[in-house]
Image (cartoon, rainbow, N blue to C red; front, side):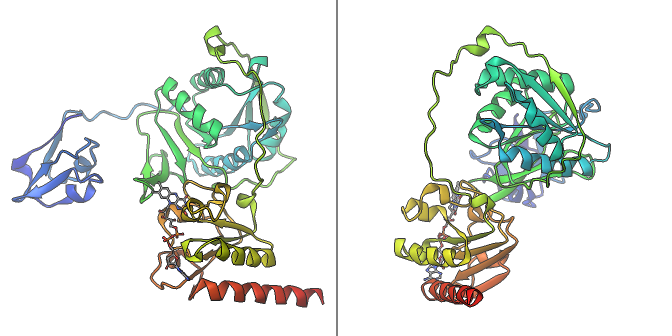
Length: 402
Ligand SMILES: Cc1cc2nc3c(=O)[nH]c(=O)nc-3n(C[C@H](O)[C@H](O)[C@H](O)COP(=O)(O)OP(=O)(O)OC[C@H]3O[C@@H](n4cnc5c(N)ncnc54)[C@H](O)[C@@H]3O)c2cc1C
């Protein structure tokens, strides 16, 4: 797309400068000028109220999407179980389908070999329909056959929304699928909402290194595809009495889909950290000062029956293992109680803790951004407050036992 300034219409108001996230437009002598940083994204065109920015893309009427309906969830499996993210996405799909104006159904897609028994769990967690595609060649995940099966199902059934987990598998499969179907894909969404005006899916995710939250829409393609990381959405409680439909689909693969063969599988032993499911999380940041600080944090966590987590800085410093990082590039948590100790509250960290019920923040800087989202703010030195809290909790626990 080419963009240009229509100088005779421009009054130098600067709305385009504010709208441009790249510094791609400046105002000089009361006229806008595009700089070499312009990426032709078109944000300035939408902002301009004077028709002072031209482009060579003609306004097109929105395509007719009336055939597209229902909210689909890819039901990822892990061994012979459902991956928890599948149930979390079903919870979100149920909420979205309920909010839609035109009665959408929630559908899950199960792909594999011998996976049909998992359909009951999907129905109990909110699926109205479970599409099952089984084949011996689908036993182990491989990109090409899975992409073929899903692309066929989507093309035949035309869902309006298609959600997948931003797991290693989802991150491999979703882009492949979106390319095959020529669709947009918004990865790592932290929030999904329906536009009240047109019912389109507003997909919010961190952008520009996590410094802003961008809301992305797909006005020209269906289904609207998004991935969401595990732990971000909430699964509904299972209702074994729910009834749903199971639809079996024949699978036809081509030789080219099977060029990759799985020769063996090796399970890598990793310490199981259930941060995403913890009721209480005690997290530390740079302010904890080092491993010794984290030992104090661990004492507090033990007294509270909590899990320990931390910011990316603390992982980079080697004070915590990577699986305990919380935030945009770490885990998302949604505990009843989140205690942030010596954490500034950078947006990338906040992205992982917004589902927490209560946030307690301890920081010696009363202007730290973490206090903007904290329910309780303790201004002071973590090296004094954390041990004092741990001792108080231990005393309380002893009191309960006595
Ligand atoms: C693409 C990208 C992805 C990222 N992903 C993540 C992510 O997933 N998770 C994440 O956490 N970060 C992430 N970051 C990094 C993030 O931007 C911040 O740098 C990081 O969260 C800051 O960590 P911190 O709060 O521990 O350190 P700092 O920002 O340095 O804050 C330390 C805080 O401790 C306080 N403090 C110091 N000493 C004491 C004391 N004695 N008592 C009380 N308070 C004290 C200070 O006042 C300060 O507020 C990412 C960054 C980028 C660019």
